[in-house]
Each structure stands twice: as structure tokens, then as C-alpha cells.
Length: 195
Image (cartoon, rainbow, N blue to C red; front, top):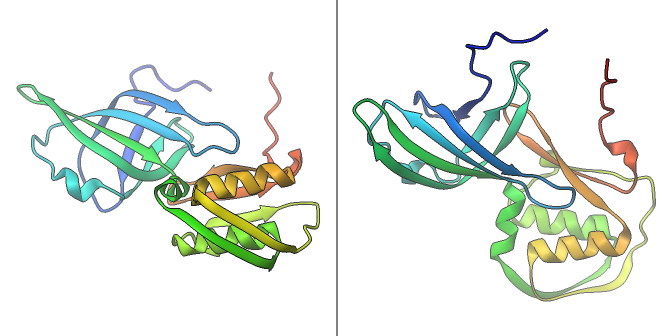
């Protein structure tokens, strides 16, 4: 069934904020084994929001009337032009995983499997066990040693995944996003048949 033409299909909800945002434009990029990024232009009747308080807040971008959408953290916030009634704002939503690109390390992991190494790095960044999941069919042996040398934690995780044939994607709900690792196609939701 189609939604009426005069209903809005997109909505942005920011945790702890009761602003009356309306989505004006939206540009996004999402790919397997890459952090997503959605740039959202908004309008609001509030002319002066404290943009600093928006940074790193969880937000949900509803993309359809059934409630599906993208959950992420606000990575960037800016205020645009103000008209007589509405003020323009823009925000960028990214997963918590994208913050791993900001830390470069040199270290050695010993006697750990790739999933355990990845879990350890994620948890160092506050991504706890309930925010990621390994749905892998293969058993990954412990590595005698594994070196991270002068690369970001994000690049290190991506390199380990590439070496082992592991991919990752995100599952979204209105309150969280989960990082899901897999090594075959069974971790993906089945698409509905086309009628």
C-alpha cells in the first residue's frame, strides 16, 4: 500500500532533543565493509540550536513509513541560512566504527584469532559486545602474532577482515546500530520477492 503523497517519508530523531526538524535533502553512502555516511540537510523553526551539544549524539534517520532507516552518531553539525520562519541545519550521521579512523597504533597481538583481535580493538573504543556480532561459519585459528604498525584502528580491522575473507555491514533500529561480521551471504537479510 502506498503512503499518501502529502505525508513526509523522512524524519530525523536525535536522542535527548525535541527539536522540530524536517528533512530537506539527504545524501548517503553505504557499502559492504565500509563505514556509512549520511549527510542530512534539515529545516527547523528554532533559529539558534547549540550545535556543539548535537555532536556525537545518537540519531535515527527514518527513511520510510514502515519505520526503517539509518541509526548513527552525529559526526558533524552546521547551521545554514535563516529565513523569516525556518533555519537550515546540516548534520552527518556515521557509525561509531568510523571513530576508529582517528587513532593510529603500533602494537603486537599474540595468540589471538582475528575475531578476538577485532573484538579487543572495538571494545577499546567503547563498542561493547552487544553492539557487534560475528556470524561466521569458519573457525579462525589463533595467530602466533599479529602486527599493527602505523595504521589507524579502522584500517587495521579492515585489513584483518580482508586477509581472512570477512566482511561487515550494519543492522539498524530506531535506538541503535549493530556491526555484523560475516564470511558468507547467510548474514544478509533476504530481500522480499518483487510482486
